[in-house]
Length: 295
Ligand SMILES: C[S@@+](CC[C@H](N)C(=O)[O-])C[C@H]1O[C@@H](n2cnc3c(N)ncnc32)[C@H](O)[C@@H]1O
Image 1 (cartoon, protein in one colour):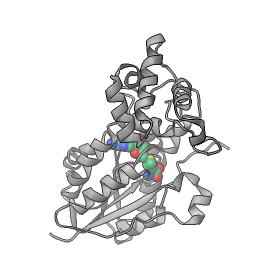
Image 2 (image 1 turned 45 degrees about the vertical axis):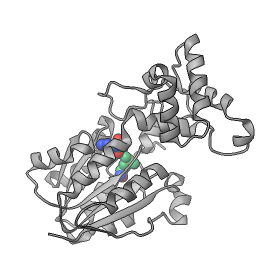
Image 3 (image 1 turned 90 degrees about the horizontal axis):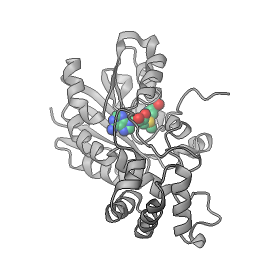
Image 4 (image 1 turned 120 degrees about the vertical axis):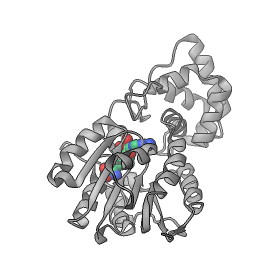
């Protein structure tokens, strides 16, 4: 059967932390397939959702899915770092909650934009196809030093320097065009004893790093969370779901530093065993939330 939706992660927990049942205006900053947005709309018939996504295909799917909710939904194609412009355009001063469900969606991984090491596809990795920079350019044009930095910093990959050296060596012979070519280079560099017998492909960290760099993922988060916080009403909440330690550490720090907010999750909320069994992609998810305590 064709999979129609991205299974929303930590859905019940997100709705609880957003206090969506109490009613209000919410921003879903990462609309994706619209799973969380729909649950917010269902939680209270008075709820309104303003949805943002940088991926046009996600926007199309969400429009279709959320049609039954009519003018309770507004959808914007753009970066969530533009949340301030979106809310000004909507004429909304304060909202009850903002949700960020970060990272790539199920559709990205199953699509054809080179997000996964498991398929042979062109090196692209752009979430927003209007953007110019692709993974192909990063891999073929960044200096060896810069590549090593990206792979080390955004992939937390200890073999970063060696991988960068090998990429540069290989691209002198011919441009690196596909996911398979990149994955094979990494496979050759990392000693087999480090990855043999493991389920995780040895190039996963390198792919994550390049994807984060292409999409400026950490800069987006760093800009958007403080901006979003300024629009949250008293007792309103900001809820963030992350999928890897780099994101989680950044979100933990950003929430802690928000002025006038109290962090609600001393430890992040993680999915229950049952959810991970049904949706293995949820296994690394962590939810953190903060509440505005000042008017
Ligand atoms: C994990 S999915 C969200 C899934 C969604 N909660 C659902 O239930 O279907 C993340 C989505 O965020 C979008 N995204 C990631 N970074 C973004 C950014 N900086 N601005 C806007 N959208 C972004 C991606 O395009 C993707 O569709």
